[in-house]
Image 1: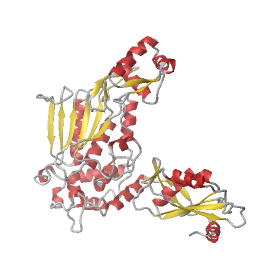
Image 2: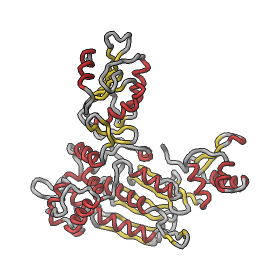
Image 3: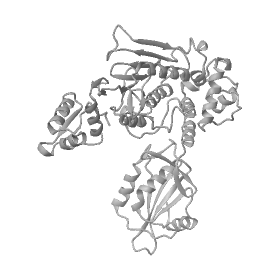
Image 4: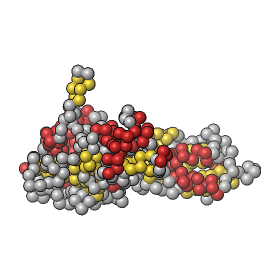
Length: 469
């Protein structure tokens, strides 16, 4: 139990990495952010009713005050209910100090809302991604995962050129924990890919293995690439390839396949013509990186990249883990990678940015390009990411509904919230009757629907156009 004397002693010591003062519970949201940072460190305590200069002033505390603090702390994920104590202040006329404490967390990293924080002295600061990666790897040491197991291969089974190219790119990205003269063993040790006998583990083989050393134990590495002119595979495939290489080489080949089989619409801006892919290449790269880094390598089957007339489909073998659901991927979420060593390598090479944010960037990039959001589902085949091609909007079925340029633009603005028809018509400079025709067409496809009646009715995305949240 915390006593009034303890409070006076703590207040006199001043704020530190494990102690912060808040004059009132009006600052409870800031305090929750600080508590998330303390969970990521050594633990600590926030005292409400103590000014920043250490003066104990207390405050009136009702039952609802404690409920408000508890509610503010639900913004910490993974959720960790703190210890909350009410301590009477002598001579304070009924006022009290509230002590809210957390230990060092066991499920690091913790986030507050959509960001990660750490304590730096007496301040709470945004957690550098490098620290976040270290916390993920520390938490993974006790896991019995496929990637940690011995590979039964010698270091000669690895592609030396691929390792050295990785080294140079990691250094260029300022993510390389090694020097520019580091040899292959040095790079692998820094990535925790060698055992005590200098033999590569399975993650090393998956990332850097030479193709001629993969079979028979590693026949599911690589990917299957296929392109069709319909929305489903039939007897005829326009292009197909089976890639039997390590993850990095396979990813490069998959990107080249997409460049070949996706359209490059040409747009003219003044005298300058541009011909970017119909799907942003950064979105394609993110989807592929997720598939190769997060897939279940103990499960049979390769990563699959399918290009249909209406969509690009990337399938990662194995389902979601650690209680994560497909709907979680549409909002900020914790990073609990199934393959932390491999994800760390993808991060250092620059294929993955801040952990836990990749799917959100994909949504933003597709929206900026005038596309519907990718649909992610956890199916029998694995985790399926369906990204709409130009002229289509992916529905919850995973198939694309054809939409024209104006319809796609209408869906884009409806994704930001309901709008009355007259506002939509004014945005596009259309007569109300013409806007109604477009909106009715979207309604018939299940992509938009009206809410309300008469002049107060507003249009919003239909259930088939909006991924489950």
